[in-house]
Image (cartoon, rainbow, N blue to C red):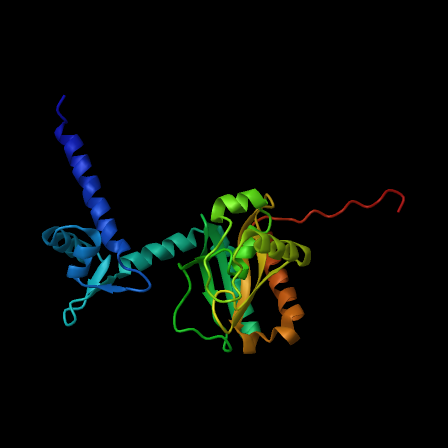
Length: 271
């Protein structure tokens, strides 16, 4: 039986949406600006299709165009939607002020991330005076095995679940990156025992990070909170205990805001 006109319209509309989204996905951290010719090459779409879709996206504010350079970049509509998404996140709402205050108090970076599949996803990022950045980490993703925040997110997971999620061997970022599940499990066991996880030049040279898990009402780990910065600013030989205590304390505050209450051991009868 032939399709109705409504079915054809729905199918065509879906295809147009998919094509438009493929154009938006072509903009990355490494390539935040693109020419039409690049978009044609990356998406495999015809030049007339790309020109038509990118023009519509520009009208709607999803991209902007620099008439001098001919380059397109992500537009204000996407930024607005990202803000709406963040403001609907209970983790972001509960942790934002806490992370901002922590960065100001310690003069270090303070970050909050959740897990999305096999990666961490930054929800908050504030930089103190001793750990400046010229860009925000919000919206970025990162590896679970090579970051203190990622390890904190894995702390309560069983070994077989971790292996099913990220495998048994991992990408290398520096000579100090954990490369296999056995060493990762050993690091997680240490983190469980002391209440926080560490990262010492495992993702990037010259940087360190301490993180603690954040739990929701059910007690499940849903996020992690960290302090980070250059090795000189973190000064772990002298400050690790102090920083760890701060991170654990503030992660617990976020957990409390999400409804988590740690179980208190019952008093021994007659004790």
